[in-house]
Length: 288
Image 1 (tube, helix red, strand yellow):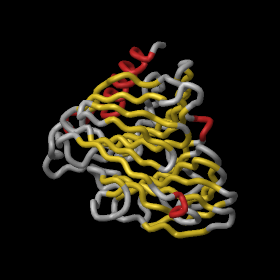
Image 2 (cartoon, rainbow, N blue to C red):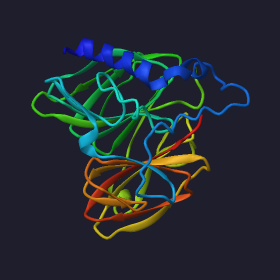
Image 3 (cartoon, rainbow, N blue to C red):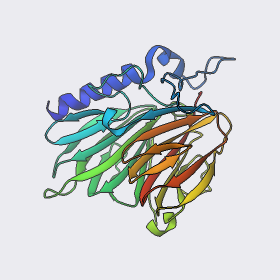
C-alpha cells in the first residue's frame, strides 16, 4: 500500500471506528444534556485482578502492518487493524508505535477535533503544518497539536540514512472546534530518572505541554527495584500504562516491553520496576 492510500485508509477507519455510533454526539461543543458518554468500557475484563477494573493488552496482540516505508503497531483499532474490543481506552483513541524508514513519512493530510501527541523514541521527525509551523522533534521532545476546527500537516523522517521511531497518540478533546494550535517542548532526561516526569497536562501553569482534555501523561526512566504509588489527578479518570522498555509491575500486573495495561475505578496504582525500565503513563477521562 502506498503512503497516500495508507493515510486515506487510516483516517477513514479512525473516523469510523474511533467514534462509532455516538459520533454525532461528540461533534458539537457539548455532550447531550444529562448524559455521560461512557466510552471506556468496551474491553474484556481481566479476571485475574478483582480489586479494580483493568484491561491487559500484551505487545504481541497489537495490530501490525509493515508497508515497507512504515513498520507500525497499533494498540487500538486503526487503519486495516479492526478489533471491536480494542477501540479506545476512555478518551485515549490511538496509540501507534511507528518506525519510519529514512527520508520517508506521512504526506500532508487533515485532522479535526483531536488532540495529537507525538513522543520520539529515536531519530529525528520533521513536522510541517498549515499554520506554517516547521519543526524537528527528537528524543526528549514532546509535541502536541490541537486539531480543533481543522489542520493539515505532514511528518517525515528528517534523515535518509537512519530510521525514526515515535509514539503517536490521539486523545478525544474536552472541547470541540477550538482554534488549532501547535506546541512542543524539550525535556531534561535526568528529571525522570527514577521518578515520573509530567509531560502533558490540562494546566498551562504546570509542567508539560498543554492538552485540551482532563488528561495527564508521565514518563519515567526507572531503575530495577523502584517502587511508587501514583495517585490519579481526577476522580472518574482511568490510567493506561505502556511499557516502552523493560519489565514493570503495575497494579499487580506484570508487564513487559510494549505491553499496555489500563486501570479504572481506582484512586491510585502501585508501580514496581522489575528491571531497568522506561514507562509511559496516560491518565484520561473514562467518560466525556
